[in-house]
View 1 (spheres, one colour):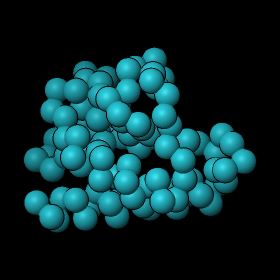
View 2 (view 1 turned 120 degrees about the horizontal axis):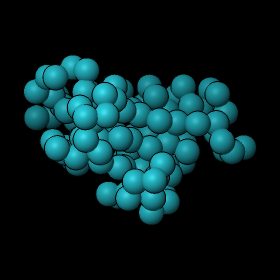
View 3 (view 1 turned 90 degrees about the vertical axis):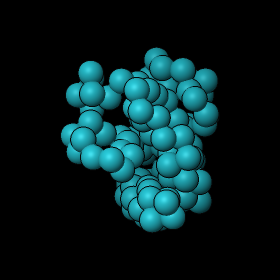
View 4 (view 1 turned 180 degrees about the vertical axis):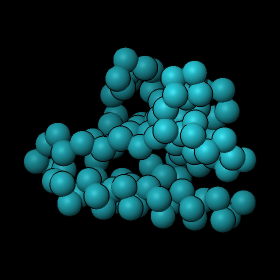
Amino acid sequence: GFYLVGDSENPHLEFHQAIISGVEKVTHIVTDENIIGEPAKSDGIILVPVNTLGLCGSITGGKCPATTTEVYPDSPRATDAICNDAQVAAIVSGINCVLKH
């Protein structure tokens, strides 16, 4: 399934929800209450201190929101191609959200 790791110290939930909305058209979103041991903020979204943990979303240091995306071909509903399509949908949805603001 697909999920996002956002920054708990600088959350951008509208941005993350826009990405989830785009990706759910391509593949399933993780709906667990806990994702990798962290409580889900909503379906497919967890927030952790990305700078402290050195996650991908901390690299830019820019004003635009950033996130770490995770998608795994962990079920018959998620092939390698679907995982690639999900990442493309995440990028497009994130860019579209930023352009609206």
